[in-house]
Length: 535
Image 1 (cartoon, rainbow, N blue to C red):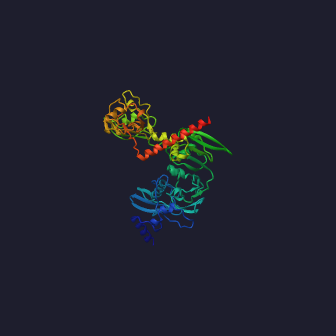
Image 2: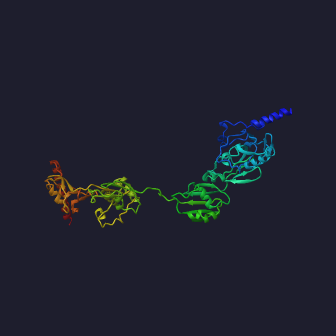
Image 3: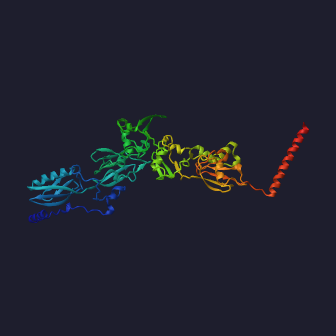
């Protein structure tokens, strides 16, 4: 009997085969993986897996990882005797090493357990090197209690963290920041999952141990962060938290967004119906003052945002420039000359006389004009009809600029600044004038500087017999406006002179006109005669 036992021990020493009691528990299938066991809440009656595959977020730290029942280790011995064994830590926290015996490793780190195993092996074997490594982390159960769905038992491993057994759920849109983690040894700490979720702080999301109890209390006290931060919203209040610490979380560990104003306001309820407002700069809020300002329940922090901070301000240039297109500007700073220079300058045939800068009207005046246009004519007053007539005959988008003066050698472009959306149009230069209508030879005539309109009419052959000389209209090329020939002193290149024809009347129309005049004249005579009789 003694010989057979000795033979079995020798076989184990040579082959390194572990005893049946130390065999590794079977690895679960993918259906029981950590994704299932750690994320999905488990009801109390659900059976626990004995050794789920652990998903590590960091490599195991030998100096910090504490061994416990269920951990699986690899034991390697090298030297005069070489062998390897895969051993499981028993329920009592011990390792059973063949030919050596039991070694208590409960509560020891990997480094500490390796030292204890080395001391034990050295009692039986000389000149050997001992190495203990972790092969598989243990699984165990923890308790999730309080304001959660399905409170009870959850399966975890020694690599699991709090966020893996408690989903980051919110109560009334507020994520829990005061989860009580109570250890089996009596220690406890408060877990802030928001700090982990928005800053990635692993220290705010500790690893779990056997017998841990996670208690989620209902949210009763809050603080609010409103405005230009990365994560605005309502936060569960944490006792002792400072303004700077909350802003770090609300901004995700980074600085303020580009649209945040330079000052912020902290509003605090100091008495029923009475509030206290503290105004701080951004630098003060995240600096020494903010680190010393401890928040109180129901404080509200407001960070104003700057409107249109990211709006692209552009102006467009069209026509006879080297590079037509849209260019970025600084409203009120960029000048017309800057825009032309950005577009490469004018082409040789550019017409500065007819160049225009147009600007989209804004504000209540434009809305008022639209209301007048849409209103029935009979409902408008005399003044409103005059306004509508004047506005419809003009161009409210034109910015009046003398481009020839502006781009002279001594021209001053400083006062001619742009606004977002402005459009500069530079037509091709024309050295002619168009004369149309009741003239002998209607068409294009050469432009002669300083000439009056009648000179160009004569160049087109003069008025015809049917010309209505009293209703001649000039279409100005520069602004596209209409003017009577009586109001135009000189003609510019590109202008158009329109001479209307006299209207012809038929014989019946002439009879009707004469009859109307006769009737009117007779009425006047009778009226005068009647007045004379009264006198």
